[in-house]
Length: 241
Image (cartoon, rainbow, N blue to C red; front, side):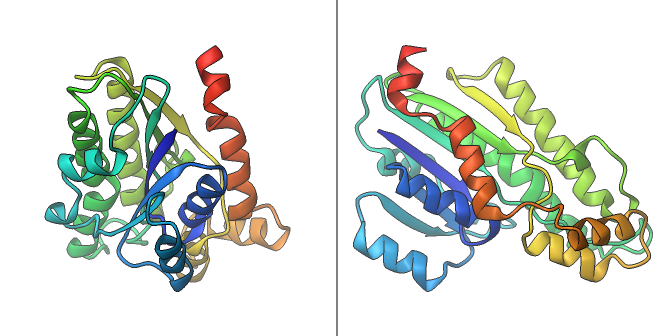
């Protein structure tokens, strides 16, 4: 059995991954501030395999604790896998340094950097005494972590920081855990729409608009299926490899 904890599960790529994983037979634990009626109905129909947890990643005390994650997964066997899928992120504040609202910068650091670090730590601690399930972390990265986009400086910095943390975890952690850093490229989500609508005049904005015009930005459902095919193979195949 595969159990997957998904952040930012209520919309965009996170929602597409949430539904694709459930359709593929995984148990899913969705974290988001709120959930659409479709997901609420799905959780009502499948209480054993779908759980929704209202969580504001900008608030430390809103994050799930070790016991909650362990209770969701329940008893495990050596062939089982538990995955923490870091998908949530915010691209705001958008603007040049010197013009950014301090409270928006703080919130972005919390969501993009602090929350992934704390959730990863909690995830590993939750299964510290249980060697049965295989643990895996999948971190949805961005090219912005390795390039300079002046209008997205906070996003670039926080994504780079979180990726650095994941690379450290991949080398050593308190519990054996595989880490995969995945960059799905540009995807047509609210983040992209926000960049197009609010980034006028900033460096790189014209290219972003042009990519959208020519259809060079991925569809969330299509990208989710591609990610599943590449990073969530059948557990039988994983055990044999």
